[in-house]
Each structure stands twice: as structure tokens, then as C-alpha cells.
Length: 612
Image (tube, rainbow, N blue to C red):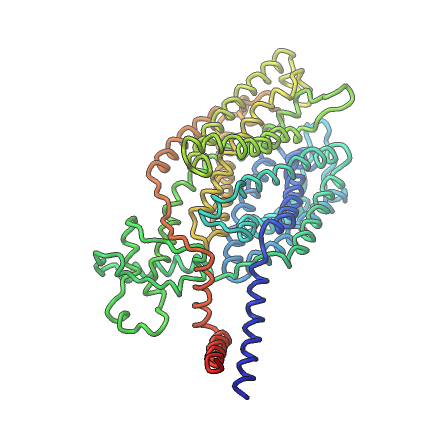
């Protein structure tokens, strides 16, 4: 009787466990996207509304010189693009993506509250200077309020940016076969949603900032961010969460140390003799194990099994001395990606200050849509956003099916080809920007307005539209392709870190952009400085644009060489059923309760056999 009770108890436990598994499997899917994207849309709305016109706040409200203000924005832009590396490590190591996004959003909200309060209270700003001549700049204490606010938003974005895309992908089957079976691309629609949020901010929030004051102009993004946090937390019962399996950086370090320790060992001729342990690697390779590749063979020494290690097969190996082939290939995948990843740095360098400078250009031009209404300078970015949004739809619906006929690729073209096209379009956009600046200055000279920085030059601001549209098209190809490349080619356990790499490209590019602008400003003279502090009409911004075009051409050549020699990571994909079986086998080794459950089921089967 006791055995029967125990058997029934174990059977009930088994049923409960099965229900839990089914419930867990029901999580995720497309129904989670409204909550995740609502969070990211509100976040991007707040971010675009905050950063989109911040150059105007710094130059018009805090009376900072143009170059100093632009460098401030790129420095903090670089910082906010570097912090995602820390956020990715926290998410992948112990916190998980859900909690990292939630806490980081709260920190970002604190930053927005701080700068909103400083915009409302007059003691945090210098006296107004409508003439922009002999202005009293902000004091150090007033600037510190600004810096603390920017630092909080930088830290907050460091937790949000590397986790949102991987967290969205966690809700779907992201294996190659799973992606091919869907008729839509997660990355395309992610950028479309972000474009919609930016469009709203650049029209509504920027107008309020320029016409109703910065208190409301910064307060609305603050409210939007609060809504984003609430929306994200409300969807938590539906999310499929992936348990963090330790810092991927530690695993990379373990492989490197093990390879160095065994540098004098001879590699076996047959790669199958290297160390494989599927059970050990299951938690970090749910979509499939990485196959052995012949690149960077010196790293394979980390997987050599010595005689001593071969004798002791009962315990888990010391991973600082012996690594599996899968873990070695993780490091190889990262090394292979780095040259392609680095090609994005100079692209960001060349475009890091364009946003600030083009806003200042637009401020000097005729912005009237009607005799009584004129568009805000920062709102000109909507043309770039509109191009990107419409372009994503056309790319998905027209370009991909058309290209698929010729390439046979489910995505139309590879992410590397997509990036290359983006590089070329971006060069064209920068050349067009230089030509447009020549035209703007020629009109200023024609109407004798070169020495009047506050005058409105009688040339329509819509002459800037072509360069904005070209930058939008370039983003469809380059930015989406770059993120897709890093996500696909990174090991699945390092996807947050791969997204952080995407952000670090922006960070290094922004810092290099600050250096480039500072050098150009310092060494191009005082009278005909390319980047003057107050009067853009007497500058040489067109020369600066042509310099950027040349840098991008050199970068394109470098990229083409890297792309030609790139080798895609080899993966042995597994089915969902196999994944579940492997997970159950792995759990049997670490969970006594599961072992007891299995024994109870076996006992039940034996009892049924006896009854028959």
C-alpha cells in the first residue's frame, strides 16, 4: 500500500510538472510583442524627445558655444553607448534581461526627472541671450545638474539597449529554420516601431520645446518613460524568460587561459578527439551546438584532453584547464565578428555631429510652411525617420521577394551585402550634405547675410530633405544589417553582449567624432574656421562634410576586404523535441526531485505490468 501511495504521489508530481512545462511552453510568442514594443516605443519617444533637440537647449538656454555643446552631446552619447556592455554582463551573468530592463528604465526615469526640474527652475540656467552675442554661459554648478542628468540617462540606456532586442527574440524560435519560416523580420519591424516613436517625438515634443517651453518639452518624455515602465511590467506573466547561465566573458577568458596553458600540447589530427560535452553545454546552446572550424587552431588546444583528464571522467572538468569545442567556437565566433564590427566605428565617427550641425543649418534657413507657421529645426529629422519607416515596409514587401528570386536567400540578401549597400548610400548622403551647405552659404553671400548669424537666409529649409532621406535609406541597410549580423553570428548565449557590441560601435565612434571635430576646430584657423562657435555662415562646414566623405570611402574599402574573407559560424541546429529531451537529461543530473519523479514513473509502469 505504501508503494501504491508513493507511486500515486509521484504520478501526481509528474502531472504537475508536465502542467508547469506546458504552461511555460505557452509563454512567449507574438502576443508578448505589444508589451515589449510598447515599452521600447515609449522609451524611444522619450529618448528622441529628450535628445532630438538638446543641441538647441544647450546653445539657446545654457548659452554654450556650438562646438562645446556638440562635443558634450557626443561624449555623453558615447557614454550611453558604452554602458550597454555593463548592462549586457549584468543581464547575462545573474540578473536576466527582464529585471535588467526594468531597473535600468527606472534609472533612466530619474535622469529625465532631474533635467526636467532643472529646465523649470530658473536658478539652474544662465540669463537669456537672444542676440547670441557676448552671452553669459552656464556656471559650473548649472552644468553639473545637466551632467548628472545625462549620466543617469546614460546608465539607464545601458541596461535597456542591449536587452530589448534579445528579450524580444527570446519570445520566438530564432533558429535559421525558424526565421526562414516566418514571413516577417523581427529586426525590420523593431526599427519600424522605433521610427514611429521617433517621428512622434520629433513632431510633437520638439514643437512644444520650441514654442511652449522646455518644462513641458522635457516633462512629456518623462511621462512617456513612466508609461513604458508600466507597460513592460504588465506583460511579465506572458514573457518567456531565459535563465542567465553565467557571464559569457568568463567563458571566453576560460578558453583563452586553457589554450595558453596547453600551448605546448600537440593537436590531434582528428577534431573528434577534442573534448565534447553536450550535457555541459546544453544550457548555453538550446538552438544548436557550434561545430568545429579550422580557423584560429591555436584556440583548439583548450579542448585537448590530456592523459590525466582522460582518466578522471567522473567529475566536471576544471574549465580553466579544459574547454569544450562549443565554448572554443564561441570565442572564435566573436573574433571573426570583430573586423566587421569595427567597420561601423568610422561610419558613426563621420555622422556623430551631423545631427547637431544640420539643426544649426536649418535654424538659419526659411522654415515657414505658411505665413504664420514654421517648422522647428530639429523636426527636420522626421524626413529621415519617414524614409526609414516606409523603406522598411518596402524592403520587406518588395525588395526581399524580388531579391529572393535571384539569390535563393530567404532574407533576399545577406546581412553583409545589406551593410555594404548602406555604406555606399551613406557616402552619397554626406556628399549631398556638403553640396547643400555650399548652396546655403552662396545664398547668404548673395543677400549679404554672412555676418548676421541670427538672420533668416531666403532659402527653403526643404533643400535639406534629400540628405535626410538618403541617411534614412542608409539606416535601413546599414543599421538594421549591422544589428542583424551581430545577433545572428554571435553565440546564442552572448546575444545581449552582441547587442552591446553594436552600442559600443556607437560609443567609440562618438568619442572619435569628438576628437575629429576638436582637431578640425583647432587647426582650421580663427578667421575661416570650418566649425565656428557662433556664426555658421562664416564657417567651412562643406569642407568638413567632404572630409567625412573621404573617411567613409576608406572605411568602405576596409569593409569590403573584411566581408570578402568572412566565414559564417557553423551550427548544428536541433529540433524543439531534441532540445526538451536534452534539457530533461541535463536536469536529471542536477535535480534530485526530477530523479525521484522518474523513479516513481518507472515504479508505476512496473506495477501496471504486474496487474496485467
